[in-house]
Length: 207
Image (cartoon, rainbow, N blue to C red; front, side, top):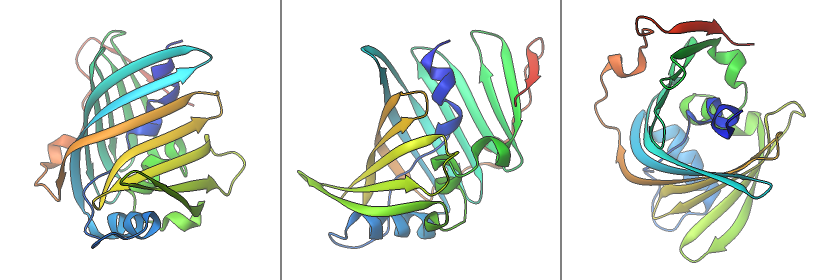
């Protein structure tokens, strides 16, 4: 199984331009992001590593609160993940297959649910300041529930923007996502968060 299938649903995720002011610490910037950005978009680069293996991917992220997102991989393979607020769609073009899941059950308290949702992040995660590396302020987020998919999450902010996320999941994968070219509150058409399976593809229901 490709590592992408282990982490794809989680990333429908992440984040960007923040309205917080000055040189606020990471937790303050995260809260400002969650509370102050209705829509956002950004390019991303993703690296997943596990036991010496490494996979790189890149694409584009779009979010519309509450609960809608579009996470689109363009390299090295094409894969589209869309959350329309009720259903999570994962379309793997290479496999000609679409996986459909109930969005709430699929994401739970994952970063995708937190960053695209409207609930306070403290409900599901214990937040701690994690220091500064260069110009990047870091926080760590520890899940309060043992059945969470992620055992460790770190978020790095620079100039009031989420520039990196690092996640360790229950499979032992370490995922690093870097964001660039962010746009705060762009006009995003509703159609960006709607998905209709292409003709001829298999549609399966996920667990």
